[in-house]
Image 1 (cartoon, helix red, strand yellow):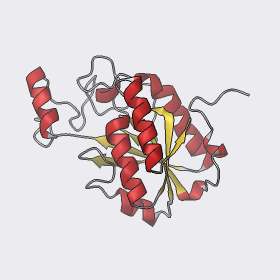
Image 2 (tube, one colour; image 1 turned 180 degrees about the vertical axis):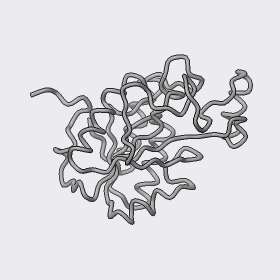
Image 3 (cartoon, helix red, strand yellow; image 1 turned 180 degrees about the horizontal axis):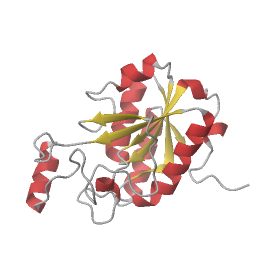
Length: 202
């Protein structure tokens, strides 16, 4: 049997009802993934095959796939102040602008394929729940379990994880489908999320 790219297959996670489960794929966009991108996360590119495998397995099992993304105005005026300051110091404009293409764009990286009928949530800050309709969308769909994948582990994955736990969702993190700037940061944050009540799937 071929080894699962992301560890324990979704279908083997205990007591997981696909009809009550959603996979949130967070910030897997070129601006965060591609080498040379302004906001590149060092480990993100290597996780693309594992993320694609998890997405495909979710579809096969009937688990809803939700693509959580970042978008900013072209002048970065609605960006977090520290990030806006950093990009202005670098002289980089139009990062994650709506409809953007290329290395600093909102596009999915090569190897990840979003289906037209799959939901997209645009979040303004780290957590997928912050100032979005995600909680309402999940509850209206009868979702009780959320599976997290994407980047970056200490920021968007972790804040989404803690908010999901606070909203009483069973929260599962696919370790091989998440990424950080260093292995130490990755390991420490996975351990912290586990201590907070998340299930870390290795």
